[in-house]
Image (cartoon, rainbow, N blue to C red; front, side, top):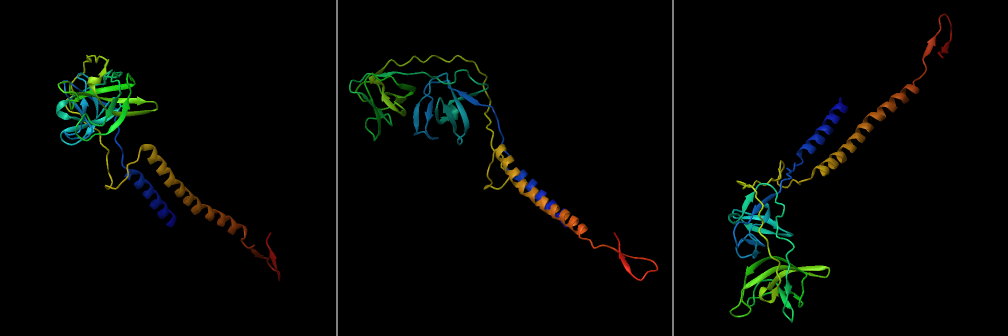
Length: 268
């Protein structure tokens, strides 16, 4: 009876542990949103003061999650940031060409051009790198309004990636000293508008401090818990069987009394 109680407690603990692991809801759906107007910004943070560049019109961003009431966390090409909910149109399906890629240009400043952390000539900025004359290893993402470095000229800056050998750096180049920017074609893909994107969230059936494990991890944990239980079961039953055999082997021989005799004889 004690053995049955112990076994019941062990299995109850194992199963309660396995079912208490939070199940992570999974979805293979990737949600995109279209840029349908000019001057739609890609932000580095979910606020109005963190503009990075204007996303080329007619292209898409991948929506990752809600970031408050007014922003989505999003991906554009290989960049991660934010877009305003009011400025993008979620769509159904997956676009063939979601991003305006393979866009480049070159620097035509004889003394090279400073790659800056912000599109500014007056406020504090960091010089990320110096791009040399006629450099073309530049990836264009979009443009943004900034300071005018040359009076009565453009205030447009290019947000780009400078591929300097084995390293890459992000920043702004003043567009007046650049040329040969790749022509950005209009994306003419037709996708149905989505009413409201729904992001799959993780289910949490435990306390706030409960860890969230993937399915393979859950299996490994359950197996790790079960193995000691099997060992306990083995130890509970195995000694009893050995003891039973040993006791039967060491059982004293019966003494048989013979009729009409004055002695006792061991029974073979």
